Length: 246
Image (cartoon, rainbow, N blue to C red; front, top):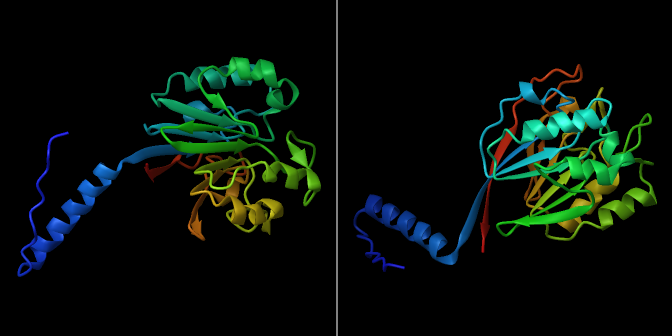
């Protein structure tokens, strides 16, 4: 590495000092080592993925509901579409419409050749850890549903390691970007579990009418559903840059 000389500030010139300070901080980050990762996140395309304009980035995260009825043919089409995208890394979890993963997990994972599938599991990319889980409090009779406030849901969230960098779930935590038909319908147990897990970023979808972003207790929370309640593509994938110091 070539040596870099940082000159002392001219304290009589505030502007010069500010410039010197910015340069010093910048070089300090480089010397310490820092991973800057551009994450593109989306969910709930419901077979309409080709209508979405997806920005380029380092990692594409898909937070569930690629399908309509969860048929294998839908997964084949989704995987083919993923193969056209330029992102070096792609991560996918299932949602309540993705029956193929609930009923035929192994064959479905074999079909999904253009992404890493996470189901109660984790992957690390360039020192950034991702954990994905498809479970949600039950309503109607869809895939990956468990009784609300049940021990089964508690067990699912208890598997998530503390300090994971990026948490990906299909459901929202209760009370955060989780309104459907005027009611908060996110998972109460997941909301409590976030206090232990402390992810830097939490990405989810599922609730089409609550697209957006919030920051609570140092966690960036993102509902990345691109569909509205009429299953029309109306929202853009969200982008976030994550800086991880080595």
